[in-house]
Length: 161
Image (cartoon, rainbow, N blue to C red; front, side):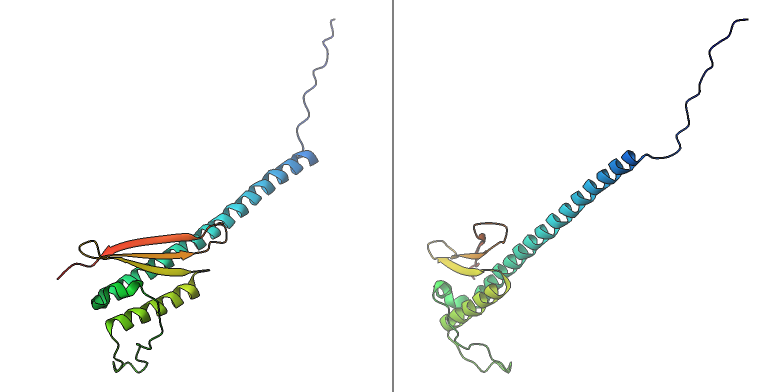
């Protein structure tokens, strides 16, 4: 009688080996580091977006001040001054000329920019050669991640009545 060799069945796997566990741990660790880096970039980007939104708000603010004080004209590109044109009682008892109000508006506006944006500055340029007059508002600030300051520029014209 002929004998056949015995067939050995493979051993069933009983569990993870130490090497498989370490590889899985390494893959998970690299993934978690990637998630943390992505979260950090998202936070930095949201800070940049917030400062840009604040700058746009300040540009709109001075544009509204110019619209309210139409008589000032080119005075909005002159020097800023604290002319005490704000009535602290709210009774409207302070009288300022349009030019004094423009200087006061610039003083208050620039102080708010400096307080709310890192290294923030603001300027208004008036071009009377255009019809209607063109106002160009520039708001600049320092971003921690950039070497040069960031600048937002907005130009607007007041309609002639």
